Length: 231
Image (cartoon, rainbow, N blue to C red):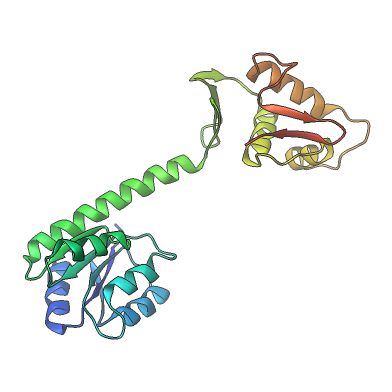
């Protein structure tokens, strides 16, 4: 089981240490920083799964640090603050924080928030990874992970070559591919001028995915150039 790493950022050592003890007892790896600058430095060196970030700190406060972190990181951020006013909470959340807890806090409540945010983050990542292999063009859905093609939930059966051609065009929406480029990309062989293999495959794909193959909705012909699927 992979150990999750949590970065605790607070200018008060006692609070850093207290949070660190509770997190360590739950099996997390804990990194500590005294301000936003130290936090950014740690993030460059170590993979981090969640950040507990105090708002009021010297050198770089939590709001500024949160904005900087969100420029290229998307792990959960829980803000800590001695202030409980709504504006502070709103400011923290609108700069990219996922949750907010006020001091003094119950360490067990903080641990519960940490677990909740990590569960949510893992679930979102799993959904995102699952969707990474899916291409949609109107009601045409191509699942590159399962090699399935559907139109309005109706399954379309394609040969492996047909599927590869469709994927090539769908992944590059709006880009025109010449017959030569399609052949060399899909067959991984040098194209010969007299070879009409690609045209035959395009015709077969259209017969399967188009309602009117002579008036294609998905695979468009760009005369004298090649084929494309519009975005």
